[in-house]
Image (cartoon, rainbow, N blue to C red):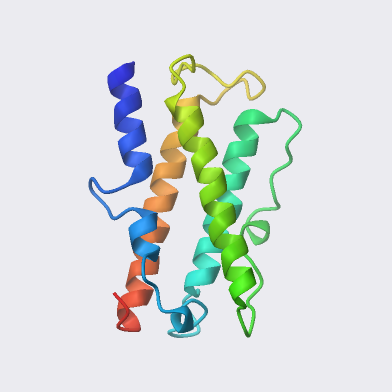
Length: 154
């Protein structure tokens, strides 16, 4: 189990087969955070806010039997905004990484059986939830990098 946990933690943190979300956001030009490359693409802030909402949902789904997930799909995406403030960016950024630390702490707990079914779900394992988070974060980190490349900020 320790080897499985090690693999999960490495994948959560990124940097194996894909860039970590931290690296995807490093040294980002503030002017690019809410820039829209075209009408069919989200902004970097929208991507990160979506990641934050989805991650918060997964974390609370694991921990809170009374948790209610947002409405799919509209509850998982922010409304576009014309001007992104530094405060809005920091709230999203810090919120994402605050919950990410909780996920890492949970996945690191040697007493947590990764293959156990989360009791209140009756069907989903902890491993399943961590794998969804790994896939989701990697996918959207890639989109963030692509948007940065479009704006020559990568």
